[in-house]
Length: 403
Image 1 (cartoon, rainbow, N blue to C red):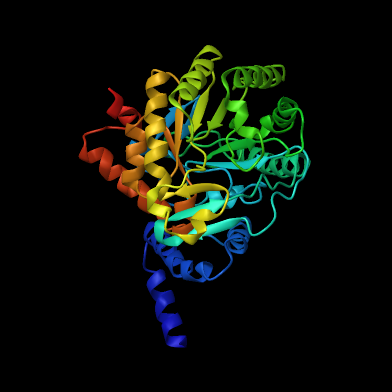
Image 2 (image 1 turned 180 degrees about the vertical axis):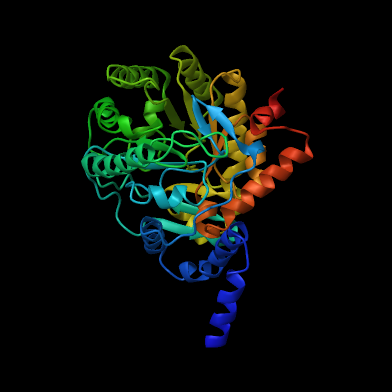
């Protein structure tokens, strides 16, 4: 054993940083079977804790330039992001961004702390690459999360002040208010709140100063009545109030954070037309498509866990969410940036989302199953897809299937 350790150390000392970084990511694959033995929520809690404590590998290799893009005046080193729901309470931002995501979204954050729905509330459908959850916005509350985001923001400012403002390699500086990547903050409402708009306005007033973009989550199936806010008049009234709350605050040269709305995949064509009309008329900065589905596709119908209440995510959601994404890209005439979310587990999946109209792509369930090694794999596969079809950049491919 001692000989193996010495030999391993000797080998590591001879490889370059990029190779060693790749080995660390590959090594995480050996941990995945251990997590599969644990209760889903316990495994999730351990994963967040590991990221918060810096126990995950850090991506030292720069992203290929073909993956870089600029949206809302923010520079993304790559279009791959982690969806809200993984780091609900903003505990592990630095560790998660360090994995090589182009952006990470925390939340959903509610004004008042709440436990969420009774446990068990997360169910694996491993064979189908899916998860059903009915967490119900379990959150530490806005004040606790604001404190964490404030500390992260302060650390970022100190690092900026202590380092040179110009890059030694003359390249483009990617990053936002939380570090090397872009930070999104997803806000929700409390289960017992009678004034949803007031909850979202409070979220904006308290958290927007720490966010590179903000998300109004009105599409979780696990908070009673929440999805009714996707109706045309309800959405219009809500967005107006939240925009006004954001715009009345004082902002520096970079201006206020972009405001996005996250919608459900279980919407009729009329619903989509109404949302698109509101988004265009109120000049919404973006849409996330989509949240989890309450439907149960045939591919999961034989799994006993499919009978559990809650939102289904993962591979079975891919076609439904991608079709909705493409429809919304057409309805918004490609004028509003879209984030594609739902069922992404490979570079080919991410590429299909982009061709359907997504400027950015998020994953969650595949990351829960595949771990950190999945991130560089997806980025490498996405590069292959873009080069295969002759695209010079991600932005050139956005909406290609709708032209």
